[in-house]
Image (tube, rainbow, N blue to C red; front, side, top):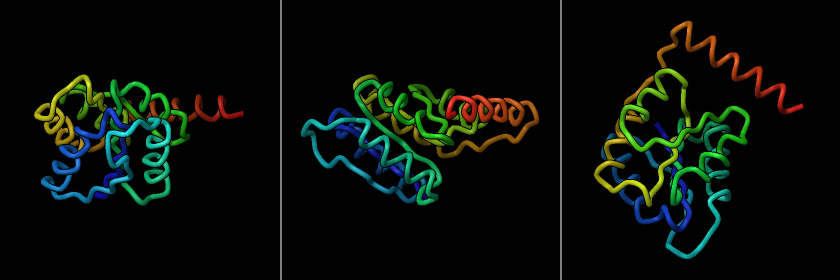
Length: 150
């Protein structure tokens, strides 16, 4: 899979670990920046990742910022993006299996590199279950999304 990765300055140090883990797991990282710890704004990079996912250039995305929350809020403004902040492996896999999560958000000031590696691996290995109950819930989310876009 192609995995779009983006971060702000707070996420930059952990992004290097994430990109390396993506490669180690046999996937292709699309590094969308930032490229150093100079102050930048997380919405810019979350937007780049979401656009890559929505355009099909990437199958999934990962966005890192200080807490993971701002990246998640921004990402969920995009119709068709289902983003979640995950700081444990259960959430990272279950959110894909049940909610078809396509953008993982991580707080680089919340977790360290070893946990980040495990979370990224869980996210990459997970597959959507396609169970009726989960399809029904995703359909309801789509209705809400359409109603709110009016």
